[in-house]
Amino acid sequence: SGRLSLEAKDSDSEANVLIVGTRDPLRMKVEITHPWGRPLLHALIREGTVNILSFPEKRYYFGHLGGADGPAFFPVSLEPDQLWGLVRGYPVVEDHDRAVSLKGNQIILLSKSAEQVQVIDLYPQSILPRLILFPGKDMRVLFEDFENDNGILYAQRVRFNRPGTNITLSLNTKQMTFNKAIPESIFELDIPPDFEVLSLTNAGDR
Image (tube, rainbow, N blue to C red; front, side, top):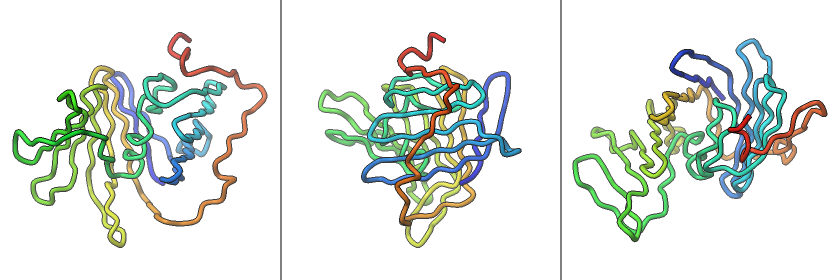
């Protein structure tokens, strides 16, 4: 749980956020609320699919993670593992064929065709991940203020940026709890009857 900040070219906004998830199988429930308590967005992510309730728009979005555009304050363009790394506060290493290092404190993961899959910059003092680049998607994820919870490391501040959009999303974690049982009922989403239903494939045209 913590705070979610959105920095855009002409405006900034903040909201409270609660995220509950499991790694295997990959499931996440995200609840974003206004600082005064009004719900803004509820999202359910499960095995690469995403369902989003946008309360200000009175819309229900559905589709697949990766390459889709939905509400500006929710990064549905991320792949499931990439999104997990963002909310977990620690990056997931992408599938790759080999790794090279062309300069200090940086590792480049390459595909079989020698294309860059992921670039990992490290903090020199601790060798913890500092910045993750996804060259194929023009995305940057910055990890800051690491905390150690009984041997589990996580960044208390994670910033997600797509340079071409001039939008930066920051997740500032106030409390992180690991390895607790989660009721199945958490991973449910009730759709209000008056919400417009919209596919994420067509969301950018609306």
